[in-house]
Image (cartoon, rainbow, N blue to C red):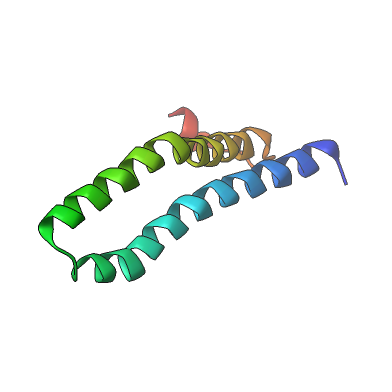
Length: 87
């Protein structure tokens, strides 16, 4: 197996892991968080959502960056011609 092929597969794995982390977080909140928060008071809802965003704003950007960089690296290392990318 060629080095560029292995590099493309590794970068694709990083892209998939980054996207999966973001998607998994969104799905979890839609299924569990939204249902749980419908049963709390408005004050508790506001404080809880504030804390979620306080923590997520510090920790989640790395997963988005990993996904984007991995996707761009996958395109760069792929051996498939991409004429539409340059147009």
